[in-house]
Image (cartoon, rainbow, N blue to C red; front, side):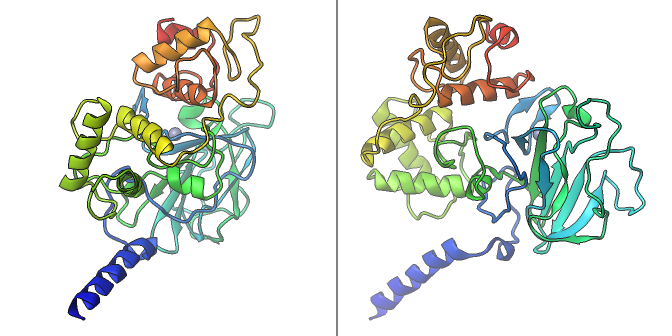
Length: 359
Ligand SMILES: [Zn+2]
């Protein structure tokens, strides 16, 4: 009976660990922790994104997600809350020349930040317009899904494709990674199928790292017969030991740290384990040939594509099989490479991207 009670108590503990609402877990997160936080998707229109939380940019490491969308696509509140800052000021009579940022304090104490909102007269790049919705001033309460403004290319995004730079901060102001939460919110990420926080994210899972990607790692290892300990979302010594074991089994460097290569191997091996149907990325639009201008894009095939895949792979990106077929994974790798190289992020391999790759 005592044992039964103990095991029941253990079960309850485990269940609690999975059901605690974010509002109740006010404890400090680690920078970039992949969180499971309920969001309303902040861009209300066609868009795409990838996991760009750790992208290396010219001005340092990027701690946000960039959601690519056309200028003037509506940007809506990711949660209910109170507008805290507009254009970096909490003064409701702010200077409208300093366009275009909104910070929202959620009712549960978290914050979301919306940066690079529109600053152009539609159809131009004149920097003269205002991309924040009427009535969105500091102190105003908004509901989740309410219009805040419009996508643009203001501030440091002037030379890039328009996008929303979206940040989520916990109650102690730590910026967390919303990649998985955006997927849960119905976002259209660049890979195929729903975004997987383990297989599709790419931060290094070191000792003490926490998050939904770690929980997924433990779950995947367990289902493949490894014993990483409790599925608690915290990388402890047992998780590291089992990652090391797995790395040895597949011939990878045995450092216990799940980075890009280990994640890719886990994905491949897990795919075999659950006998998923094979990759579908070559299915749609596979006919597009190399264009006459020599620009390679999703659907392109041939020796040039194979070479691009090899160059991406050599630089630590994961284009999928080096097969000369430009599919979703190759496109994702190109986008990540462009993002990390401060190139125009369009997924097309044109002259600039070729040069940067050393093609
Ligand atoms: Zn950004």
